[in-house]
Image 1 (cartoon, rainbow, N blue to C red):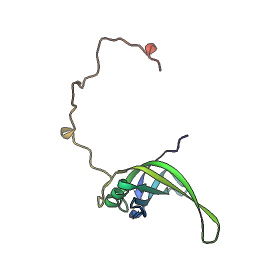
Image 2: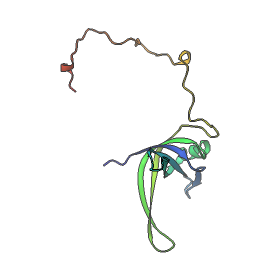
Image 3: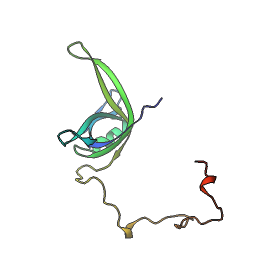
Image 4: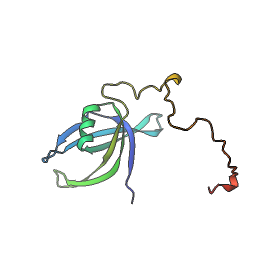
Length: 146
């Protein structure tokens, strides 16, 4: 069975961090993820997805992300139920994050760092040259297994 979620979006509000009675950090936040299409009125729509993250990653999310920050979340979907004040059974869907990538830092107005200029690009390391392979094996498309 597979239960895997990958999201990229912006936080709709500052993350809320708390500690359990046993001292484990837990942080909740909501991501706004744009849909890949526009509605009938031509406007882009978004989904608002509740996320929860635990332990050290929870502390880092609380410390380094804020409303408007862009983040990537890798986790699993969890559905829980509870009884509302009116006695009705309610359901809650949230993503339990295994990892959160900070795609913009706290207070940073840009989405990510600018790409390096050509003269700043990292150089290849190791014993490989950067030229295409021109070794002694002749292969045709018929020899490939795919």
